[in-house]
Image 1 (cartoon, rainbow, N blue to C red):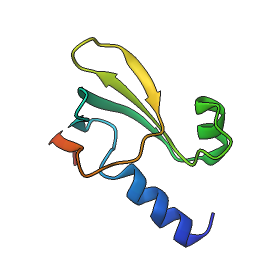
Image 2: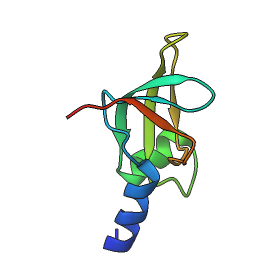
Image 3: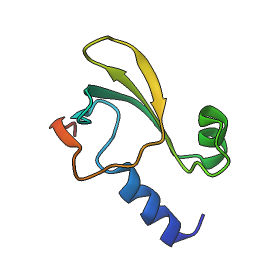
Image 4: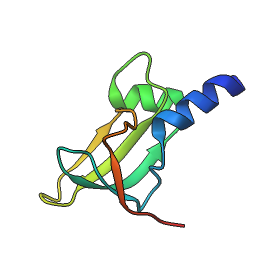
Length: 82
């Protein structure tokens, strides 16, 4: 992966790291795992172009799911981790 693509992917992931709690606008979730290996992300998401995948837990329902959504200006960190 080129350095330019790494920066783009890092920007799309944003501040999401394991343990971070954030508001998506549709709910509040906690990051469980961030997958940055493109092969694994493609397998998990079943998308040919996936560069990352993020496993999150919905803190209202306790349901977990995997997302490939990019970080947007409407997403808000509620609890950061070091």
